[in-house]
View 1 (cartoon, one colour):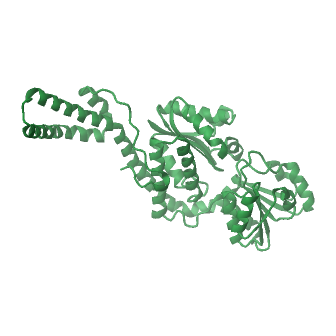
View 2: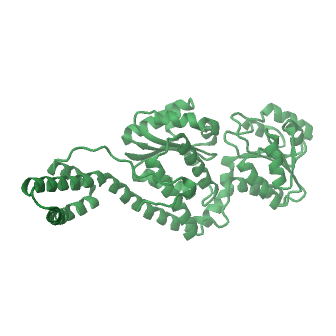
View 3: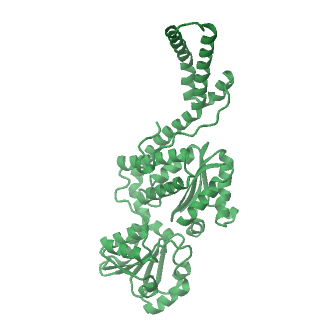
Length: 432
């Protein structure tokens, strides 16, 4: 079994490609079941955020598993394979483990050190555990990734002042207006991203925060949290006609604000400028709306410019975090190699002990129980001393496994799965 990763991110694919591959929460269960139905995929986890779509898997044959994952992403989202290949990256073995650790530690994020990605990975992991597609191998890898992320945050200052996509969106609004005091802000969508943006907007001094959401109860809940006002979803167009800034973050699969609809909004505003910050993937606002007079539209990819200073300030801390990740990858690799030789070690010891028992019964069948125990103890001590050096060498050099099995004529045994860790909320046990 080997860990593999196939995916794309803001580093390799523009928003137009990422939004085509995005999976809505309601689609995850079906996608996960399809993944583990692939011939060479034993376990699978799917993470889909505004900045990345990735599949983490345990594959029986790495090369075949990677090919199946590439094909799955293309067919599941009806994206041409050749076009998709230009945006995809893939990792196997130690490189895959390193990638998972770096993602969990926010070292691969647009905003280095941002806190949201760890929660997003945990949510993706929880979904895979519930569906049953993340079991022993992925559980070990992901639980360790969460431990590494905790270590990075406690041993470095990478998270100090770290921004999220939501907070960067608010920073962009501030850079446009200078100050948000006296400004009316509309939040379209009341999910986690919207909630983060709303809290930051209120802290930045926005005079009024209005919230609309398809589920009005959720809009009311968020409005109470940020001392804002919830408005009906049907009032969206009217609200866009009067606010100064609108931040959209719904989970819609198609744009909720078409260019034609925005043209009507522009007429009602009498060409007063409107700043739209679309942090949804897929996008909430038709890109053609940016061509309308007085509409200043920014999407997730536009936020990279705001992130540049943030990245420079964290580079030194990121270097320290990378060293921690490298150390943890090495330790996890050693643990994985130990799992590979464990069956051989157990079989070799069982083989030797079986020979001892057979010879005792054949040679000294008439011994009383006490004498038999003494001879048994002596024979076991001899076995332990004879096997000590071979077993020690085997633990440190997995390449010796085949030779040992051939020399001692050991029967084949199915590769065991590592012991499954406790559920995420209470997990404390870690691989040595």
